[in-house]
Image (cartoon, rainbow, N blue to C red; front, side):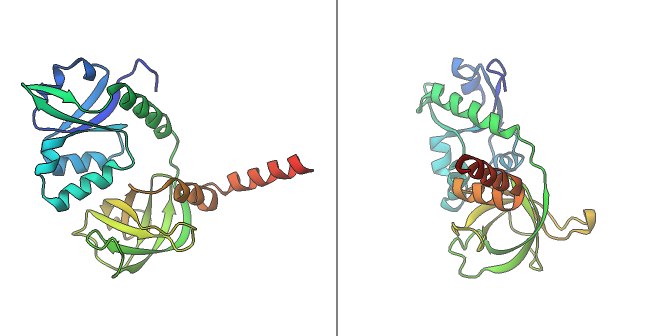
Length: 228
């Protein structure tokens, strides 16, 4: 993304007018979301670089929904705001926010090609982050941004779930959002999910182990040539 292009941002705020008057937002392409459902749906579309969160609005949401917002925000550039005298006040540094957004946008341009795999996975509902009542699934394809999971358990009433890979080093449960369920396309039945809270080491290991194993082979060759 070039520096003169507007940065795609999602804002969880009540009144867009407070932000449209601010010079800070001149180079931002903002999708305004007054309802939490719209905000969550937009987040799962993966078409944004950063988030604007109105602090009082977030704190007024029920704690269960608030935790969703915090989980989603953990891996994204974020700027917090509040309204004073009918003007948007930016609590965090706008320049640093935009810099982080541009870095995130560059990473979003990578092609997320799906790779066919057969990876056992443990799944639990959103209200079970400790995975005390987990159940089994099989990842049938995977990319850097998400995967498709085959499971016999009906997840129709779930919007977010936790996954645990037992065959990677970091087994911390990964918070994911469900983008679609029970599609019959290509004879697949299950759920397509987007990774939300995957750590850097988890992402790196999945990338070299499943998504692009050639990276691992090339690194091994480079070390061989360096020591040969």
